[in-house]
Amino acid sequence: MRLVLASASPRRKELLSILGVEFQVFECDVDENIDIQCPHDYVMELAMLKARTAASKLPEDVLVIAADTIVYKNGILGKPVDREDAFNMIKFLQGSYHEVYTGIALYSSGGNIYKKGYERTVVKMKEMSHDEIEWYLNRNEYKDKAGAYGIQGTASIFIEYIQGCYFNVVGLPVSKLYSMLKEINAVNRLKIGLGGLKDDG
Amino acid sequence: MRLVLASASPRRKELLSILGVEFQVFECDVDENIDIQCPHDYVMELAMLKARTAASKLPEDVLVIAADTIVYKNGILGKPVDREDAFNMIKFLQGSYHEVYTGIALYSSGGNIYKKGYERTVVKMKEMSHDEIEWYLNRNEYKDKAGAYGIQGTASIFIEYIQGCYFNVVGLPVSKLYSMLKEINAVNRLKIGLGGLKDDG
Image 1 (spheres, helix red, strand yellow):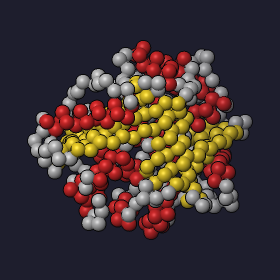
Image 2 (tube, one colour; image 1 turned 90 degrees about the vertical axis):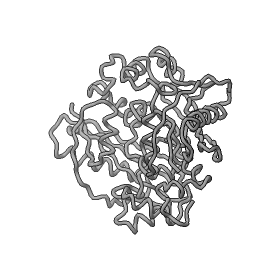
Image 3 (cartoon, rainbow over the protein chains, first blue to last red; image 1 turned 60 degrees about the horizontal axis):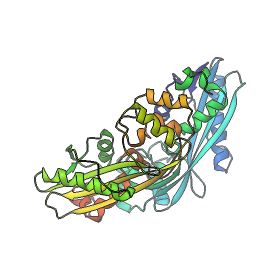
Image 4 (tube, rainbow over the protein chains, first blue to last red; image 1 turned 60 degrees about the vertical axis):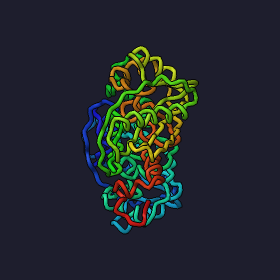
């Protein structure tokens, strides 16, 4: 069984590599406008939509991993449409707490594997002055990031505190993913790092 | 005023680069056997010792940043001396909580700037089987790491949860460092990223 990551995100690709397994990347677009307000239901639904869409276009004997990440504070924050939108997002997030959710979906092209899960992390962002926000936006890291920031870059200066999985905030909670792969006994089948271990999952 | 990082760690170098300031690296060895049991006093004392030692060997008008990171669980865990030591450390840490402390010291070669601080992060490591520990050690990431793991690498699979600053666990809490640099008004003087901002720092 081959592993496929249904995501264009270089960060997810890098994080999945940590598992030490070979995989292919298959990008597929889905309509992200789904009518769900609950953050963890939203990310799991969207992840599953991505996984199913990718699986439907791939041959059998493929296990698709898909994920979706959002920032949540009084509602879902996705990716900013432009710099002004990004400014307003950071302005809204600074000086307080928000949550980050990533949904993960595993779906085999045969349809016999179907699993979803999510991770939630609380993030405390420091107070940022108007100029600090402008300076941050000048570094052009806000594009294509939920909530207009990437915790692994310059924004780390302004992240005071997190509670939960760090890699969830980056975009792929590898610890959760590893547990899910163990639950479907994929660790041995895919020869993920530990695959060589006879008495493991 | 020039900035100098008194550390041989490539991770610290990478993290300091996030601030967008130019700096030089100056490695200096100090005797890490100091008789302090309190984890935050230990890391701050050792960081200051590194900073002072480096400053004493450098010309004036230099601001030295030094740091020291330890893992704490019923006592201080430093770097493993060999693979067996690393195995015992991971065996001891897996399936439970521990703390990670990084002390930061700022010291100017003239001696007029003197500041220290620390960050504390709680880390929950998943249960790991004997074989998972062996597999982890085979990836050779345990060397030269306090507690025998690096959260940014393969160990991320086994980190369920953190509470606090992630970059503290990597080895340099950039958010704390940025605050300390602001407190000594170094942000403008060093033209750290935001240095161009007249009404900041």
